[in-house]
Image (cartoon, rainbow, N blue to C red; front, top):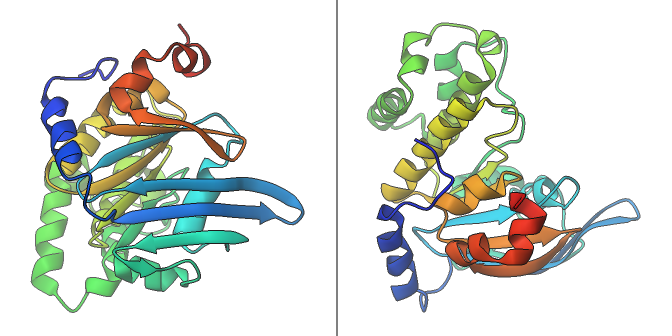
Amino acid sequence: MRFDDKRPALDSRQQAVKEKSTDAPLLEVSHLHGRYGQVQVINGISLSVHTGELVALVGGNGAGKTTLLHTLSGLHPPSAGTIRFAGNDITHWPAHRIVTAGICQVPEGRQVFAPLSVEDNLRLGAYRQHHDANWVRKEMERVYHLFPILQERCQQLAGTLSGGQQQMLAIGRALLGRPRLLLLDEPSMGLAPLLVDEIFRVIVELNAEGVTILLVEQNARAALAIAGRGYILETGRIVKTAPAADLLADDDVRRAYLGY
């Protein structure tokens, strides 16, 4: 399955998002700034994600995408601005509290625990849910249903998996955190086209099941093809936002990010 073109099934999701656009956003970022030392990396970013949406944030290397996700996850402190999640100001919450609230990130480069087995990696994702053994068991079965190869290799060391299998494991580990909002950082990076198709198929499936997703990608064509809305990030600033289908048809976006 290729994601070069938006599929008709996504239109109904876009319509549903439009119908509930008056609801308060699940995530609302306002005038967010962040820096590393004296270097300003994100500059006044404002964006929102509503419950049930799949929103794409696309931009090139150095645009500030990963820094933004680290800031949303409590891994990097903002220098100004606010982050609200489910009605709460979480701007200065520590990372562990943000995870408990329901924001789970799949990091760039997978970052699985290489010396541990596939199963142990998944169980670590559920460390805050360990008191609910039945839920953990069912969610692990769900992950194995999404990614059958992980069940086949459940006792294999994570570091010996292929890049695509590690990406599947990283997504599964995040799902065991019981996310209300799933942050995906460059899930297609370094993967062969067929594996990219498989990962994006699962992202669509998760969103159809009700998982709210903020997808950060350099692969603008693939990301916008499955998203309902999109933001374009350049040098730490949002320069354009629109329904994803409109961004795919935008001449400036096509020249800068789609290569035609």
